[in-house]
Length: 501
Image 1 (tube, rainbow, N blue to C red):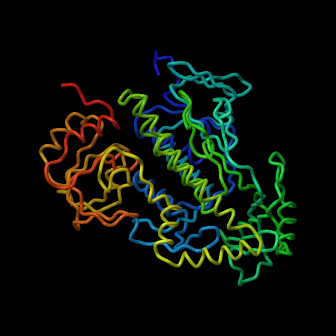
Image 2 (cartoon, rainbow, N blue to C red; image 1 turned 60 degrees about the horizontal axis):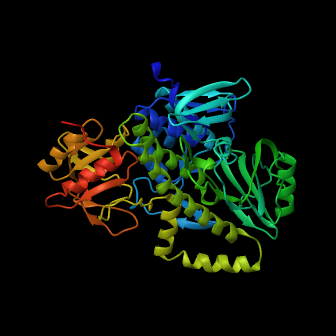
Image 3 (cartoon, helix red, strand yellow; image 1 turned 90 degrees about the vertical axis):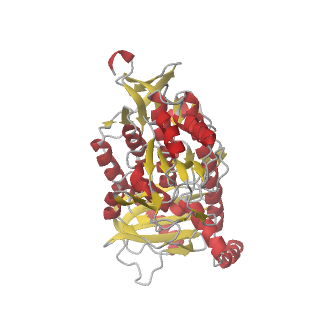
């Protein structure tokens, strides 16, 4: 970067889904980024197995969703601790979870990152960091190579080196159980097998991801394994025999791993010029498939803010909103996964609790509450605007423009904020000129005159919306003369001061 003394704007530690998504967001917003990854190549391990509605919307907002849909399969049901949830097509253009392996997600994200010019340096492990008032120096491995950047983001997993080096506390609750997971062949699995079964000592599940191959998971409670001991295929087989009474003839493991119900969250997502995202910021029991999704959404919340700061378009204080908005989301996920872990424990008391809980889930309001929570469609960030849409993710409503019908998410492909004028207001156009270099003014009309929003009653189509790059509404107006002073305040808060002159 010339004579600035920086090698790049941002160094990201970790080339998993969170780190790669963040790198793409930064590049779309014009920031330079280098991703460093300790592994020499992708592991190819399947790991996480799905993408929820809000993450599908995020990928749609960037115009890359079709790549992921082609590699996975939509599943019309989900679950809360193994109790089935129904999904509602009215809440999103993408209401159903997409069954897709993490290995495919990482491959597709890395391909997209390459198209955007992201550098991924493998066999590069962070070994030290030194912060000062201008930037951060990142030390890489035994070779004593360094990278100088304005900011460092740790996306390096639950045992994050970056988090430890930054001195960020990671409080929470310890594990009370052990789960083993592996992709294996199961020739003797009964044809009538249902995907999960509860047993006296725990539970087990087998999910077919491709012909002949199954994702097998065993969970044993009040057995906590040594977290530093490498799991083996023999341990998975023995665990399945203890729980199910048979190993169903399992053989030919592709990979084996272990997890538990420990739940921890970073005390702060930012320490000076070091930030955390994904598992580096929060770990939890993987019930409901929320972990990968939360990490990707962390990245989309942080990316545009960090790019705005490093490009000098917004004050550094904007980064404080990342912790303010995403830390409560993490707290809620830890809370609901602790509840799901408790509901999964074996025993007559838990069986009775599950029966009662399941009977409540037949009520639409209960099912909807849990569904929106797991999919993250109901997230509402705190904003200083009194409007039912403010702070919520904007739905992909159809809009009429002079060029034809277009979806709201099509307007967000460039990862730029959008001032959507649905009333042809000259006052809005006048205000927008002050931010013309960083906010797109779009004039359109709502195609059907309504604006569907999950988790609240339908509201009339607004007269105008200020949409952040992450798809959340920063300001909204209903008909009549718009409150231009409130609009200017929102524009300044999120996108920096207006152009001079």
